[in-house]
Length: 200
Image 1 (cartoon, rainbow, N blue to C red):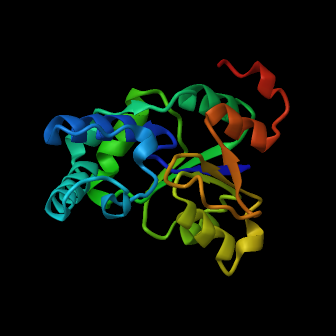
Image 2: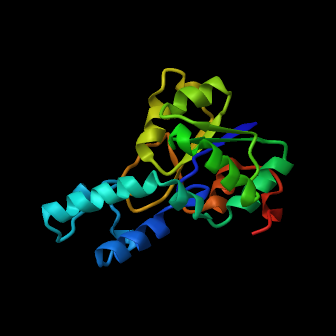
């Protein structure tokens, strides 16, 4: 089976270092639980509008910064779960919304951290690319992206859609999308035989 995984906040831990970076740069006290929205403007924080705009610009700058992305650590369980899925004969497609300028660095990051992949695709059109490449299952942290999968004209093609739970997506619910708190829960959702033997 061809399985698809987003990169940031699925295989690579973006949330914690971004949070730490903003705290250090702006002398604020963000904690991951405060990120109930994917945009700073919608967060219920006691910050003036100018500071919110400045933080928003810094978030955008940081998530496109090649050196910052290169420094990320893998999410817990990412390597062991991908290794297990590969041993079971699955193909691993990493489909990310990162821009093409980040392709080489992202490919190298996966190799450096020993996270196997059959293909790495940078695109804003994840459902179409997944369908084009025959990826039947997709894991992402962006609920709206998974809704795009669920509403795609070829949506019946997709066997399983799984969202990684974060404060910014916890309120969203759709019966077509399953929820996992970590990569080992993703593995359980995939119902692959012998998963108890996966090295935690």
